[in-house]
Image 1 (tube, helix red, strand yellow):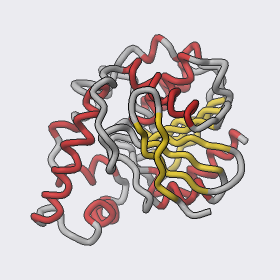
Image 2 (cartoon, helix red, strand yellow; image 1 turned 90 degrees about the horizontal axis):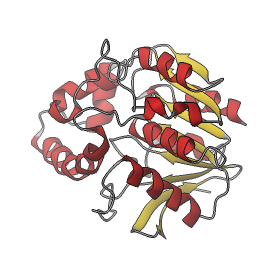
Image 3 (tube, helix red, strand yellow; image 1 turned 180 degrees about the vertical axis):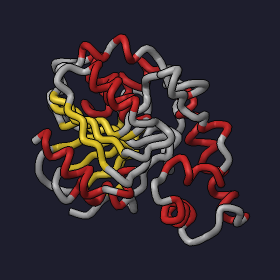
Image 4 (spheres, helix red, strand yellow; image 1 turned 60 degrees about the vertical axis):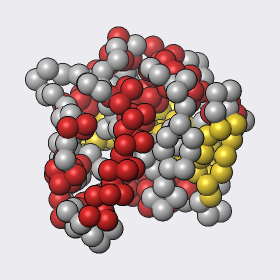
Length: 260
């Protein structure tokens, strides 16, 4: 079953989502950079699971939604999406900002999530390891923050163009204006909304996946999440940065398979 872009209506807004594959249902929540039907990591997930990857309003060609304003709104919105898709207790996985939302979902409804995968999630703040401000980061600085292999990461980001190519910059800035406008509601000025005080509520079997070379959310946060979530298992992947989903996609899927 190839990946398809579909629409489902929730209480607040129509939601675009990517669906594909067969097997156990898995809901994947994307990071601040969004997700597309061409994302190779989504194809890897769909090869093993029945994948549902909803786009947050304002991402891709989806409508924006001013009613989603704070962390609670994001959390309840995504539960609305799960309900609209007719899913009961899917495997819940999130990357970066999506991991922050997935953790909040599991904390606010601990009896509705039994399997949770968090891929270098945002949501905590350690004064000794401040997270760089994405909203003050120039395009040419992004590959160094996101990838272990900076040259390969740059090629992935630019699709063969250069970081100073006007066509790339125009598309990048226009896309980011919409997407980061939504993401900024929970990531700006710092990606911390009290999640540390709620992690104890998570009952789900939890697997944390982290790239050892993550410069955006460094591995110190992996241990903070592991400490906060009872019996969480940590899988550290060498030679991988924050975009571990692209650099080590097969190993990430293998790590998630521990959830069942």
